[in-house]
Amino acid sequence: MVDLGVRANVMGPQPISQVPQPPAASIEAADRLIAALIRGDRNEVDALTDEQAREQMSRVADAIRPGTYDKVTVIARARVANHFYTKARLTGPSAAPFTLQVRMGQSEGGNWTVREAMNLTGVRSGWTK
Image 1 (cartoon, one colour):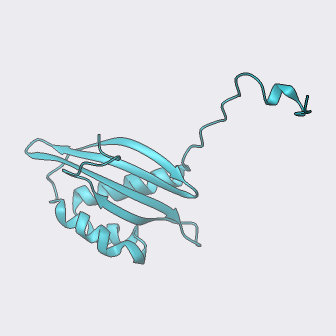
Image 2 (cartoon, one colour):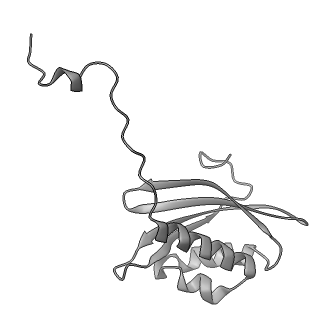
């Protein structure tokens, strides 16, 4: 029989590794961004958005009327490489729910900024629920 090394590592159930948690600064930046979108604070939104994503973020911000939404539900957080995704649903008393997804990345200065933004309202995909 072929030697497989330490047999405890190749037979039977394997241990499940720890799920990596997003850095607190990434979560804080995403929360600040969503709060700024709800308030309609375009200066704060622009400050939290990387240059390459400004057009996408502008389209998302244009779709959200200030003061319309008062509750945020984070649907999911995910990690791909060193970027963290946040998918959130905004709800308000007199508006249809609004779903958005942002991808946050860390800049060279250490700040977390939006690298990609998508309006998922009414969109059916693998990311919708």
